[in-house]
Amino acid sequence: MYLLDDRFSTAVAFVQGYDTAFDGTPLSGFRDYVADQLLNRESRLHWAYVIASTKVPAILGGDIGFEQVSSEFDTELTEMLIDLLEDYQGAGRPPGIPA
Image 1 (cartoon, rainbow, N blue to C red):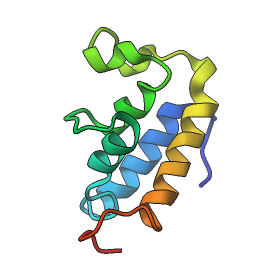
Image 2 (image 1 turned 60 degrees about the vertical axis):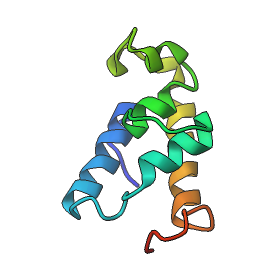
Image 3 (image 1 turned 120 degrees about the horizontal axis):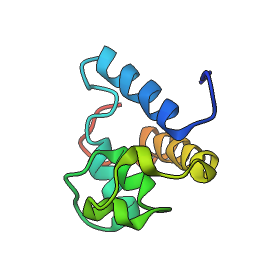
């Protein structure tokens, strides 16, 4: 994955664009997977917000927006996104979701 910069929001845009280009098939169920892995419960929030909430919990309550997540967390959040994507595509993929 090659990105223009190292911001988490850029990585999110890249992954979301890829998913959109294939009509949502690659990430079908990813939101639920991320919520289960990180929150141990369902969430209606976009997966990027759930990931960001690991560093800025107030994002879950709607107190701050995604663009207000400090850049100091960009590297950690991007690495977490990549790890979750790899796990989701591999053994961690929920049953019943085609590869």
